Image (cartoon, rainbow, N blue to C red; front, top):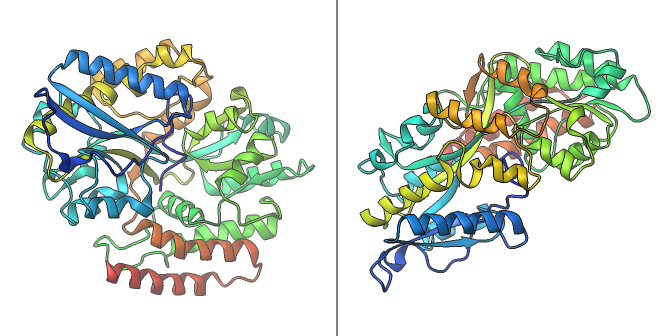
Length: 447
């Protein structure tokens, strides 16, 4: 599941799944003999600044590569789950098209992706990208896509509320018992203050249950992906903690069935101590929900075992010609994969346009490329980077884990489990997990 719109470094990046015209089947040569590629994920006109940046960057690319004609498409969101498979099946997908990490295997399985393996050596930046992200687009040893951004889950917390509750904001909780204890003290401040909030509707409860399960070393499915694994000591511990925080401690407030916007509103209003999120939540809390950067901090995922990662990248239409693949890889290098430059990495431009610079993610590169990207980011930082140091340090010790197969269907099942625990004091945790396991087994069996 995506985090909050894959909006990373610029002001209001609207990433869009695009119109059904001028797609990969239209041919690879323009009338003037140029190699023509259609691409998606151009910001919509409503995101004026980002749209201008995107168009500027495409124009620069075309000047540097006069033999390539880039035709970008825009809409919102970047990928609409309701139309994605239909576009693939109908041959209407762009030559270079956006995908969530969780789409990669599915697109390959239905034979709608071009094999990039013979060409990826021409992608200058490929070897600098984190291997765990590259591996997401590698199936049976063949490469079918290129990552663009990545995020990992952590604990967003309100420094001012920590101080008021007598907690040290420079030493955030690192275990679930510590989260529970801190939430109880924050809720005791009164005035409608909630210590810890969690999602439990619209599949978001299942998403967070998965993240919490990973954090304790558990899993949603067995290693072979064929059976449910949620009915485990770790799964029961996740639900028991939520139940006790909600009903014994009263630290999660009385209103439940929350979704991301509800929780962000609470944090932005200074009425929430902690919730799980990726770093891209922070500028949204400030720009849209009324929070201040100085009051917001980020800690690693509690539990110390693992954190859920997500993100996006690009794949290529199965009918793309070799010339189109080579052109598309050049375009990706220029737009997204040059450290400290390009649409997502031009930090000087972002700062000049009042976009947040200095957030701890995305962190796409390794080695010298990462050092270069971080150096440029730090030189233009306009947010309190020290508030995110615990997150950066703690992530070094966590396993990075992608979402489970059939994620949205599984999340729908797990939504019911989480919502039951948060709305029914006498919820039978064992029975809930048994029933969920049976449903998940059925989903996995159907493929």
